[in-house]
Length: 141
Image (cartoon, rainbow, N blue to C red; front, side, top):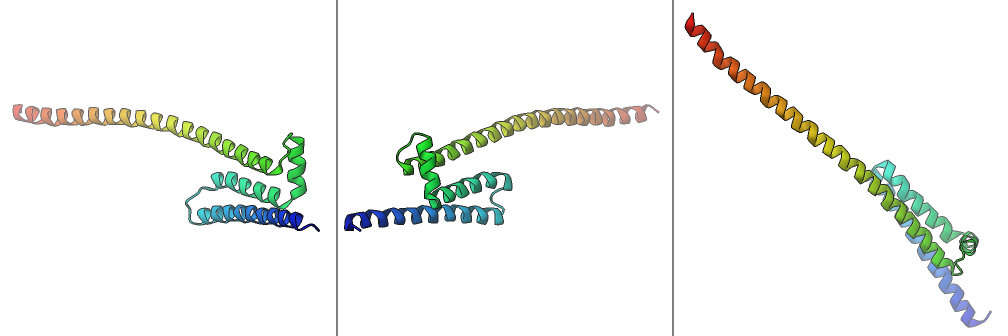
């Protein structure tokens, strides 16, 4: 083999090993976050899917090349990062939906608390009025 070709090949293998290592680290970090209860399972599924997809694409060169050619991308590492970007965009969309739902629930909860506070204040005023009215009735007798 030509020495220049050997150097390029070893550089590509090194890059692939690095990407595989990063994908494994991502998955390990997600498992650790789940174990420590810092990340809920429903969100971890998205992150684990991202890590597993990146791992499969990094390990299986033929799949990445096939997908990149099918998408019209002629540089497979660019397709790899395009897939990662799509997952990140999906995560952002998911978290935006969750945030919107939580914002609506927070508003409804604040309104309910305000109504309950108003009812409580009305009940306390009624109790005070009853207590003030009772001594006056007892004094007349």
